[in-house]
Structure formats: C-alpha cells, structure tokens
Amino acid sequence: MDEVSLKNVLTKYGIGELISAKQTQRESPNLQRCYFLDTTKGKYFLKRYNTFSYSKRKGLDLIKFLYENDYPCIKVILSNQSQPYVVHEGFVYALFEAITIPDIWNISENEAFDMGKQLGRLHILAKDMQIRKSPVDYFELLNIFNDFKKNIPTIPGEHRNKLEYIEQVYPYLALPDDLPQSICHGEFTPEHIFFSEENIVKIIDWDLVGYDYMFYDLATALIGCFQDGVLKFNILSQILKGYESSRKLTDWEQNHIFEGVQFGVIKFAIWYLDDIDIKGWENFDINLKEIMKYDKNSFDNKLNTYLK
Image (cartoon, rainbow, N blue to C red; front, side, top):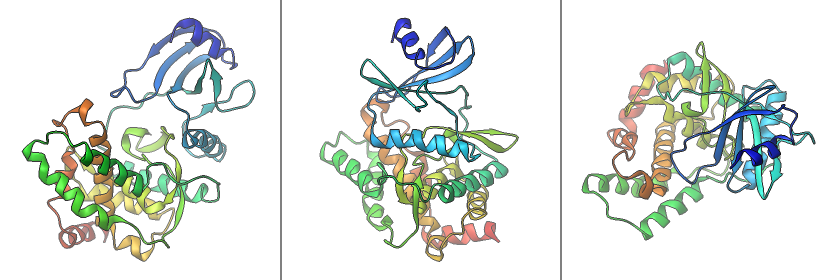
C-alpha cells in the first residue's frame, strides 16, 4: 500500500496529516495487513482486512460497545461518518489507538486473576447482544482437522502420537446443549492482552467474535496457564478464580476443567496444523505434549490443591 493510498484512507478520519507509516511484520500471509501511523494529531494503528467477514464487522461493533461501557478493550477510532470502519478501493480499513503489546506469554498470578475476571465480565456485558455463532466453534475446528487429514502431508514420527491424541480426545469435548452461552472473543490469550502493574489495560484482536458456549471461550483462555510448555497450576487456578469473581461456573463446568484445558490446547494445535506448510513441524504445539502427561484424576487432584 503506497503513501498516496494511505493518505486517501486518512481523509476519511479527523486525525490530521500523515507524517510516517510502518507496515508490521506478520507471521502468516493470511493475516491482515497492518500499519503503525504517525500523524499530526497522534499515533494510530491501521488494519486493512483481506476479507471483511460478518464476525470482523461485529467485532468492531462490539469494541465500540465495550469501550463505551468502561471495558478495557482497544479503542476503535470512528470515521468522519461515525462508523468503526471505512472502505477504500475495495478494501475495508479500521483505525485504532496505537499500542504495542509485548510478546510475553508468561503471566503472573495477579495477571492471571485479572485475565479471568475480565473474560467473565465480557461474557456478562455482551450476553444480550445479537450476533451469529462463533466462526471458530467446535465444529469448525473439527472441519479444519478433517481437511488436514484428507490432505495429510508427511508427518514426522515424533508427532504422530499427538495427532492420534487429538483424534481420540476431541469427540469427547463436545458440550451439553444447556450450558450458558454469550458473545465470545475466540482468542482471549496473553498475546492479545496488555498488562500494566499486573492489571489489564487493553485487549486487542476482536476479529473472531461470535456467539458460543462461554466454557469454550474460557477453555481458550486457559492456554495462558502454559509457560514454556509447562502447565502451571498456580496460574490456572488464578484464571479460574478471577473468572468466577465475575461469573460463577456451573457445576458441570467446574467438574470439567481438565476437558477445558484439553480443548484450549487442541484448538491451537489444529490452528497450527492449518498453517503447517508455512510454519513447519519444528514448533508444533509443545503444550499438547504437556497435557498428554495427565489423565483426568491426576489433573483434578493437582488442581484442587491450588483451588482450596
């Protein structure tokens, strides 16, 4: 995207004249093209969508709603027409306040508590908003995995047992129909959260929002309890305690945390497999190897010592 096109996009906002722009480096070509902008009125972050799906549009609407209700999400800058996005030369753009989130996955116990608390708040605040089902629900992930198996590449021997584990476990991670649902973030993980003094100040990447079981969204967040491939039960327990400070888990949910952690790990493993031709096998999910060490009883017994 050249400077002229950038300047034309910015005419749709009241943020002054462009001084400089720097495109961010993304790990996959499938990700949106993004720019850090410096203008005469401040610094901003511009995202150009490769495709502008329903969930991405609703994600922007949700950010606006949450920001107006004092929720710590990133601020979307409204256009001159008071819209959260603009269209230019066939592409959709959204403009945000500029923040830089450190590439840190290892969180403290206090950060873990606030992470759970804010996820629970999201589920309560957005419960009555109208939105379609999540674009990354249980069945969509199953479709991705089945497509991978149909076009299966050569699998290194040390990873075959991990794929067998996914195939054996995933059917048992479907949830009862009567569990509570709400709008879900879909990627509520430390890489999308900015902490300051161990409290959340900004949450980003709302492109995958949709209506789904809250337990699946919590399960996704529980990936934050893994640090350098090791399951940290003290972090896991704090995420759960923080979440329950905002929304009390049902009895079924409380009794199936192990399955929740399995789901979170397998979800990211399946996403990784979807890009395996780009990323390669070298860093295939080490968290999967870790969770495979536990059965339900050993996991529950250890977790209960931290929840007391």
